[in-house]
Picture (cartoon, protein in one colour):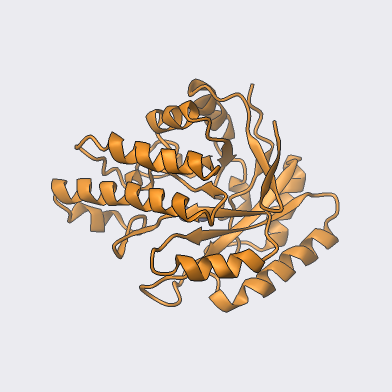
Length: 266
Ligand SMILES: [Zn+2]
Ligand SMILES: [Zn+2]
């Protein structure tokens, strides 16, 4: 049975979270988490520089110093150092250079934009799209995920099937594209996460869907369960539902990260 005792994908005021690093640590201690990860947004955007919900891109070092200070000050909590970085074809080489030298435990890979369209910003933007445009957005999203995996810059993919956030599902069969994205994730030896935040949104479903999760399981893609918490009270929100979702897809264990490597599973 899956027992989710780590929570790696979480935010603080370093990006769009509304709590300090210490607040997340205090809650992790209270919950008895085996490991806590902090993964604030690090976005090298070709569109707007800087993106308002990212840490300033020249502050990565200071962010990591603050996390290391927090590790020293809280030796009873295992704190893993991460970032959630966006994939953009225009900036991926720069991102690779920056992250190669950084002392991180894990890098979460995200696609939040498709050709400049902010996928998870507003339902109203999606409402303006025609059915064909919605399908095209999804198709390009899966191509973005495939390219993200092919870049080999990231350790695990965040919230797969994010475009469903506001309830806009594709009417076309895009299995060919989601399969190609999952094949690339498997080839890159990346993992994926069940991101429980989807249950709080109009999508009313965990990310990713059961069919995507089963397709990932068929490819032996490793799995994490995360909540994408922007406040400490959500650190393990819906984890029981996520464990069931994972088991339903055939998963029986989760993976852990340290020094950019999967070092353990449970
Ligand atoms: Zn995200
Ligand atoms: Zn996030």
